[in-house]
Length: 240
Image (cartoon, rainbow, N blue to C red; front, side, top):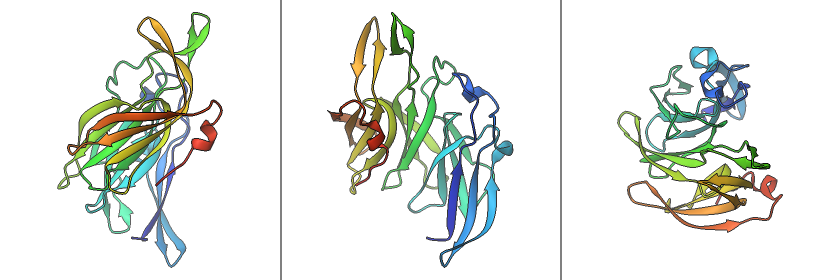
């Protein structure tokens, strides 16, 4: 509605696979500016706990209700804030883990892009793991979680409820988009790696992965389009 401009500032995380448990090196925040007639006005900082465990990465809005959804990259969490007029209230109403097993994180994990479905009933958040380790003399991803966490939304309260984890179809989803009707989701999986799958190693190339969005909000993998190695930088942003 052109009343606010919001700068999402992640801060700098503590490196390593236990970063989600650690105080950040630098705090994160949402910098919320009044916006009128093309001019920025007064700024307020939304930084729960001083921002030391608030690595904000991405933001999206409910199409009808006053709910603001924020992904926390380092903490691998989804936060829901309430908007009142041209401000965002300082404390989240709800927080949810995006990882399927948040207490068992074998490698560095970061949450990324989130998007609210056009119908306002669901929100989708990406988990990313892309740091390889030495395995059998090769650089291999072991135990990395590259998935979509799908949540239903209570439109009366904004509360999210986890309904699905599903493989994103590749590694390190940079971004994703819905078609205008919300029937299809396309994931931009930007990295390529060897992945340990049981006792086997398999090569997973960069790709565009296509999912059907079911009526209950869950995703069903449809197909993927593999990309040539080295193209991932050009796949950073896309939309319909």
